[in-house]
Image 1 (cartoon, rainbow, N blue to C red):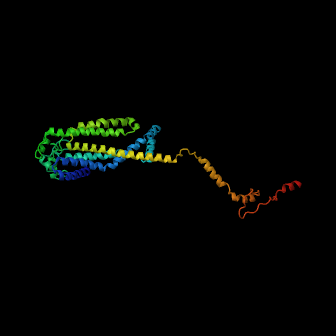
Image 2: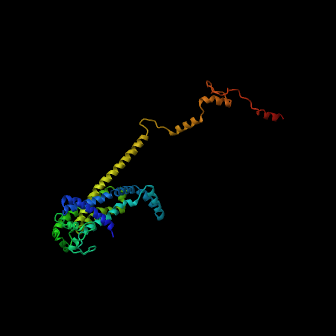
Image 3: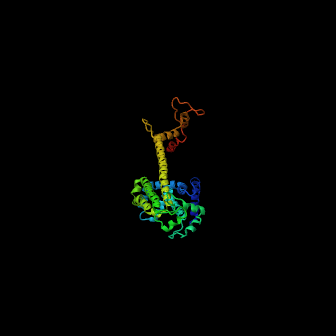
Length: 364
């Protein structure tokens, strides 16, 4: 059903096993353990850009939180209008809520694919999802892209005496299937490898959650739902890793530790880069504000006076045209003013022919 996930995951694991097996040996437990570690690193590298977008989306959501609260108060009685306004706000700021959970959604099928591929190296169980094969059938059945020799190499590999597909609560009948491939392991050896991995995975999960909570804004941390999720991430999830560890194969615990190590390093790298970008933007904004501000000791310039002076200069005629205008209007030119070329000399006012008409009317 999920072969489109199982085959790519097994192909990446096969590639890294071939690389490390060439150096350390095909049946080396360290070669298989390193293959699992670098499988995690490869998949997380593919998901790096979605993680960056997730961080940016989360920070943007925290910045928009006051506006979202205002919309919720304003349209608390009109759910439909509130949804419309929220979508409008998200569109204006280029905010996509899906990007906030996309990396998590993508990691879930990857984890399930890895869990299934690793568990498929040991198919002698009779529980849920187990095929109940005999040890001979299991050792001679390919596992997706892994051939029969690869399956037998995985069964023979030991990490400090523990098979990578073994777990603390594994039934004795399943442990007996390792008899012809490296010998039957003891539960003490399995516990000696699994318990430290469980503790490291739980502590790493706690510190990753702690670093994430520390970067939340005060408004986001004050939200009751966010506060509940923070408590779950800080205490319940790490405890869940340690409680569920006895039921997980050693290879899955290696995956969990590697995933947490990558997450811890990636968080510091991405958050550090984003904080530098924000500091650079703030510095650029302050520099622009400083350039626009008046210099110390300089008088502030009234922009309105400048505009009035410009309009007066446009409306007033030039001085050299003043005599011509004066001659046309019949007024005397100013003393010392030179007539403009081609202008008529100023003469006395002529009486208009209409000025005597009112007197004539009176005489009549």
